[in-house]
Length: 488
Ligand code: BG6
Image (cartoon, rainbow, N blue to C red):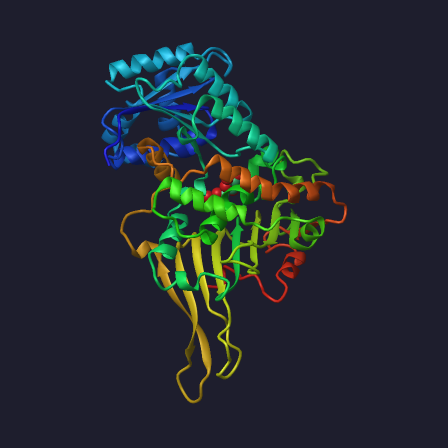
């Protein structure tokens, strides 16, 4: 696709995300010759820096670049020449007139129309201020070029704040100009959920309550909260991972076929299925949700001993939940989702468990079919089914048909941010969340968070760091078991 010449303005350019994810992703796009002919990145933040100092900070001195910096000097120099920096004068609230003037100068010098992406990689508390400031100096005006706004997560802290944020941004930008990032949607395997479901005639006919017994999603991280204790303690596993990334995965698993692979079609279907989520009652929250915190184990600190975490913290680092959709496809099919830090491995997988065959004709216990979609790592798909064991009689053994994503192409799987940045440059919002989707997700999550805060009967369990979580989460599954993702 031809991409318009444009300028990407990163607010919060001196921050961690810029150096860790955005600049490396842009460099790979540059190396792969995906960037438009005339393209500039203008970093903006409160730190006083020259263009040269900015380039040094995000390339030469950056620990995310050490090897690449040496391996392809010409390409790196070309990329560095596209980076510029504008100091915001110590404050995100002072007038953006200097930013505007700088953009006009750069546009003129590099022959770029006033096509600007504003990427907000700042604390969310100032998103609305930034949008207002852009609008106040006319930087949202589209007469000489398009304008797009990208916002990072967290998008709100609860439904009320998410609504306020949407409302504030919509005063300055239209919905189609706002790109709400969820980096899980940039992952190849998450996108592949759509292809698996809708390009194969063998799965979709079975993808419903008639054939599926339950759906299980595990999102585990082996790391603890590390240096992010301060942020994390105000968030917790449910806000940090479930409301956004996992709700996105759930919607892709559960949605109806879209009328086309196109932003509105897909996002509307995701929104529709979220609207079918069965609502909560206090007792259902008590029975169907489990929260826990990791305790010291095997040389690993407990959550409460981590830097920045208060000694009496009640924030969960583990959340497991059982819920239902109330629609024709999924009536009475339970969905189980768990997410946690300090588990035995880093792994995300979706497991579709099929119902048993109508009658067990063969010897021994037969396991039900499973489709395991490995989001990360070892990206791929595994179909588990019964086969006859060679020899006398009819003994059944369950075997795996295993597909590894890496077998499909020699190319490295692109980083989520590469895909997402390229999409916003092209004006493709398919992999970005709608405001209404985000609000719907909060509407589902809010009552659980409220109950966890206020309902004295909901225990905050403990689990030993490096284990698969509390016993209470096993009970949540009733007659089923969580799959151990490390077992194969
Ligand atoms: C982020 C969360 O959004 O996602 C982090 O804030 C989490 O707490 C991270 O570690 C996980 O992302 P990934 O891509 O490593 O699974």
